Image (tube, rainbow, N blue to C red; front, top):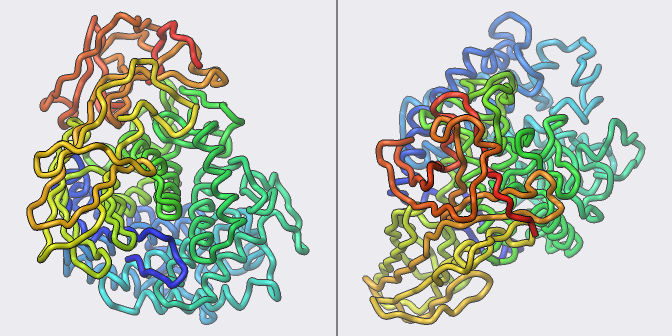
Length: 626
């Protein structure tokens, strides 16, 4: 679902539907998402009136609008995930169900293209969160946020099914937005960014420049008055400065992540140097001063915002699941823009830690925030101590549904005669490398094992360069900044063989580069040492002084009271404790456990699956920070 434009990212991702995942770690999660989470989310959208809101707006049933003013967006996100599922495996019942929902959405759309069920159901009300009339309170209404998700869903649906029924609704709405906003229309911006990403996807699908121009307009208007009043703390919505002048990540972390993703898109598609530099500065700030060791972003519960530089509390960390997703989206785009593996290192950290912690093994319970410590008593998760089955604001469950099936599309990429292996997972992928079809197959037990085999399949000899990411954690660097560092001595260096013959690592931008004339059956074997490592924070992170975190490969570990007894947050992990790794197939759906001297550590993503209890990522050690 990635249409390459004449001006675009230098690197092209291999679409998720051209990657067949057969992986012990990810395949069960992808299957649960498709078989359980997707229908469960539709069921919840029906139970909570989210889908009925469209029927009510269409006059097909009576009753008031139900739920939060942006509930429409949840339906669209689940539909996007459903479209991805259809693209991978056709299901006639799901196809028909989507057509039925689309029919209701089309009927709810007003004659001029407007689509916002709250106002259509209650046209004469002065809505607390939406104002007395259209577009009158954009900082809160989510009128543009909702349709941005609709654009993404409709593009995915069209590409999966070839149908235009949903796309026609979107094009009609987009025409209204185009005629309403702009230099000669309303000069205002959405309080919650998202429509910018949706407009870029419409541009990719249709080739219509007007959609890209409107996406850039909404970004360019931020921080500029142009007849409007910048009110109610504009920094919360990244509206305090023009986007090209911003250098510190502030405000609501999900909104920021979506905006930075859109800025990367616009930078790539326009070649705007100011955008490229600005999004780079913002990335430096986040990764250098505002990112948790889980890859999570967003320090404060109040308003779900970033904190100050180095403000990274643990028990009160917000780290919304949606923010993890937005951080992953942004870092993938940064890789496509610059080709440096450091962005993929952040992406990997998010995937294996800050993201999958947000959804249970069953696929039916979720964390909204993802703290790095818990006393087992505080109901941090929107009124609960454990993962919840649903929320009044269910942006996170519905975001999981659409993000997981897209994950295989992050694993491989191409640029001219270069093929990239970005993420390690058992999979097969079909790549177009300079007009030649190249098939790559990965065999691995990652993340528990550091051995990765890549087998090349070509119809005839093909000369190209294969680039395999060498993770920062395998080179002594947990993150591409000085925010965290390892205190352990350097571990065994990565090794690479081609057809069984050892070769030197020819490194460029974090990738091992192997150029040769490839033949069918050629194989590359990568070995990454999986040493247990201790991590300390920059000295400015007050919350982590005298504490260490424990990693093995890409996995961050934590201590739970269920394994270690109460008081784990203050118990000393002395420097002399040797933590040994062992695989436990009987525990938490199969995990590597670290144990020694009475300690048992489990992967952070698996915490709180055995009831509410005390947990800590950063363990007291007496180890000084940097």
